[in-house]
Length: 118
Image 1: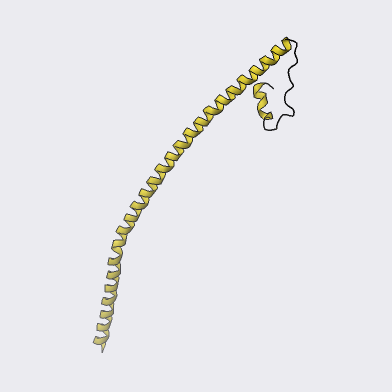
Image 2 (image 1 turned 45 degrees about the vertical axis):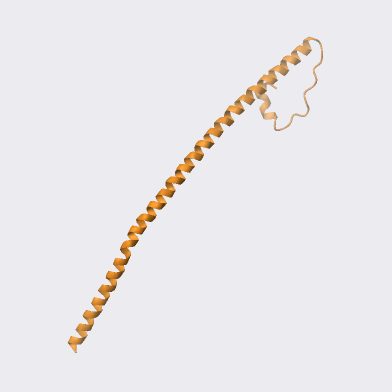
């Protein structure tokens, strides 16, 4: 009887060892699969980073164009304000009264009038 119990114990240990070997053997391909997933994720991240870099470059170029346009507009406004001042001076020199400026000054315009001397 002792022999039968010991044989049964050996059979159970052998069965558990076989199951463990099967489980471990089955997990080995998953490691490769994880490495493949990492490569795919890395490739996607590289593409996204490149896309973001391109978008940043586009935004910087657009901001530069906007800055140049605003500078040109500010110059044009200063020129027009100077021209209007010279016309008012000429009218007063001719003893004419220039028209009054528009009243009231809009709130959106008021912060910028100090730049043109008004």
